[in-house]
Structures are given as C-alpha cells and as structure tokens.
Image (tube, rainbow, N blue to C red; front, side):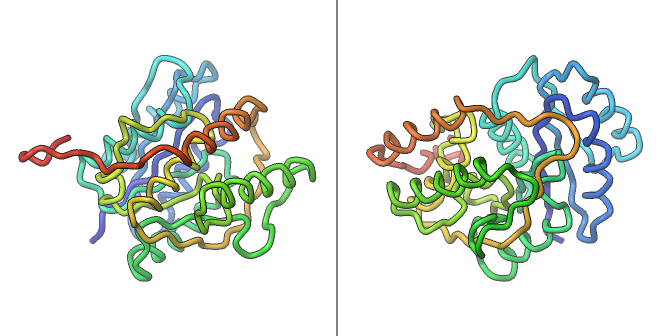
Length: 248
C-alpha cells in the first residue's frame, strides 16, 4: 500500500486541531499526519501530544520555537516525509477550509491519473469559495490570474495550499533554495514543479473559510507574493544536485 502523509502547520489552532486530525484518520486509505507546530501559546501542541497517545503510529509532531512562516513549516515537513520514505505527501490547513474528504480525490489524481502534483483548486471550475468577503475573493482570483500571465503557468489556482505531491517531485526541487516564506511559497513550489517538467493536475474543490480561530492572512503576505513572482520569472529553476550517495 502507498504510504501517505498529510502535513498540517499549526499556530493557535486549538479549536480545530483535534477535529481535523480525527476527520483525516476516519478516511479510508490510511493517511498519516505530521503537525508542524510553531509554539502556539493557546496549547495546540498539548492537544496533539495527547492525541499521539491514542494514535502512536499515525500522528507525529515537530515543535518549533515560535512562528517561523508557512513555507519553512512545509519544507520542514517535506524533508521529514522524504526521510521517512512516504510516497505521497499532502499539504492541508488545520481550519477545515480544506475538506479532509477531498484528500482521496487528490491522491487519485496522482496515483491513478498520473499527476505528479495534484492541486485542490478553487478556480479551475468557476469560483468555488464560501464565506469570504467579495473583496478577498476578487483579490485572490486576480492574484492567480496575475501569476498565470507573468509566469506562463497553466494553473488556475496558483496560491492554493491544498495539494498532493509524489515524493519524486519534492526530492527533485531544491528545497533549501526556496526563496518565499509566506503564501508566495505556494506559488514558488508550483512554478518549480512546472519548470522541472512535472505533470500538474487541478482537482475542483469547494473552499470554505474558517469558522473557528483566526486567519493568518495579511497584506504583507500578498506584497511578498507580488514582488516575488516578478523576481521568480527571471530566476532559473534548477533541480537539486545529488551526490553519488544520493544525498544533496
């Protein structure tokens, strides 16, 4: 059976973390989870530690000292998952804006349809977003249009954070050379996947804004992504260099 791991970064997600973990573990197909916990003062880490007693072979956690950014959290998770030999590696938010029941759709897009990266897409089949203010919907949608035009990447939801990678993609991308740390990280990872010749497939999902907890979005995040995309266009994307032992 393919080994699957879902990476969930957390910062102050006490209202959501137990429910999202149980929802993933309720799925058929044996999905494991690793939580990248950035020192949440609300006790999120304590909740995960308690659940590890219940799910000792399926739930893992890396605790970091303070909020270090979405991109570094995922890269930490990617490296851990590669080292442990997982075949399919997922990104998912803790707040139920990504429906755990869509995980099998992303997995099938890779394992059956042959994609190297499957994206849970809000925009590949119209606009499928619930509970966002109209201004935020417009900003997000046209941010993806901007990225698509500047980078020439045929992806409708370029900032999506609900994804499934085949391990070989993450082994090929030079994770130590990823520049953007906030939500621009999501664009950079897709662009690197695209430029390195991997197959990308978008899977339509319905995105529902969080009901519990506080959003981590800010104008600075969009600013980083805007300028970062322009720089990215002129940067050569190279695969990770391996030694004869197979290590970078």
